[in-house]
Amino acid sequence: MKKDIGLYIHMPFCKAKCYYCDFISYANKEKLIKEYVEALIKEMKHINLSKYSIQTVYVGGGTPSLIDNESIAKIMDNLRLFVAGNAEITIEINPGTANKEKLKKYKEIGINRLSIGLQSADNELLSEIGRIHKYEDFLNVYNEARNIGFRNINVDLMLGLPNQDLKKLEESVKEVITLSPEHISIYSLILEENTKLYDMVMNEELKLPDEAIERKMYWNVKKMLENEGYIHYEISNFAKEGYKSRHNSDCWEQKEYIGIGVSSHSYLNNKRYSNSESVEEYIKNINNNDFDKNITIHEEQTKEDKQKEYMILGLRKINGVNITKFKNKFGENPIFLYRQELNKLVQEELIEIYDNNIKLTDKGLDLANVVWEEFI
Image (cartoon, rainbow, N blue to C red; front, side):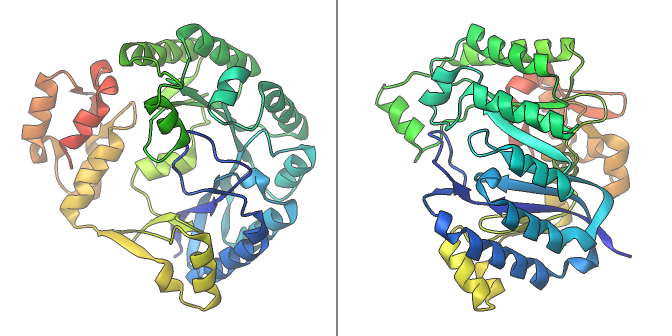
C-alpha cells in the first residue's frame, strides 16, 4: 500500500528581494531556472515518488510565478502519475509576475489552488517593503483567476508593517473581503536580521507600530474576518467552510511530507532534513548524482520528541490538540504526560482544557511563543 504524503517544491528565484524576506530566495539568477528545473526532476526521480500517494502539492518560493509556463508544466507532468485524484495543488503567485497566460496554464495542468501575495492594498506601504507590484496588479490577477475558473484562492496580508496604522490595515482587509476569497492568511511582520527592512528600522528610516498597536491590529482583523463568516482555524489563517489549507493542516497534524529543491525541508520516517541552500551547489550535486551531498539531517525523532512536537504544532491550531487523537497516535494521555506544564499554563490563563481539546486562550494567542517553549 502506498504511503500518503505531501510534496513541497521550492522555487528560489525572485525578480527582486522583498525588504522583509529572510527566506532562501535569490534575485538575478534567472539564467539558472532551466538547469534548476532539470535538477528538480532528477531529484523527484531519485526519490522514487511511485512509492507514495501525493495528497497535496505546494509550489512555494521565492516567486514560482516568475518561472516560465513550460518549466512549471514540465514539473507537473513528472508528478502526474503519483498525485491523488482529489489532491490539493497550490502555487504561490506574486501579482507582479503573473498574467492571464500563466494562470490559464496553471488551470490546464491541474493546479487547483492559488496563494496570492498581496500583503497590503496600500501602494505606499507596498513600496516601502520592497514589493514589486501595486494593488491594481493584484486586482487584475485576482479577477483573471476568477474568470479562468479558479475557485480556491488564498490572499496573504501582513500586519505590523512600517508606517501601517489600524485604519490602513482595516482598509486592506475590507478590500480583500469584498473580493470574497476562500482563504485569507494574515501574518505579523517579523523583523529578521540580515534583511534590508531590519537595517532600515535600525537606522530609523522606517518605524514599526508598537506592540500594543500590533496586537490590536490582530484582534481587529480577527473580528472583521469572523464577522464575514471566515473560520479562524490557525493563528494566522482564516478560511470559508471547506477551504482550510490541506497542505498546511497536514503539517500541523505532524503528517509526513517531502521537500524538493533548494533549502526545502522534509519530514519522513521520523527524520527532519533539508536540502542545500545554494542553487549552484544543489544543481552541481544532482548533476554529479551526489544526491546525499545536498542533504542535512536536523533531527531523528524519538517518541518523546514526536509527542512534544505534536503539542507545539497542535497548539498553533485554534481548536488545539485533540486529546483522543493524541492517545490514538501515541498510546498516552497528554493530560497526564504533561500535567506539570499544562497546570502551569492553565494557571497563567494561557491555555484551557475543555471538550476533549487543549487549546490556547485569547491571552495564549498573544503569547503563543511562551506556550510552545514549555514543550521544547
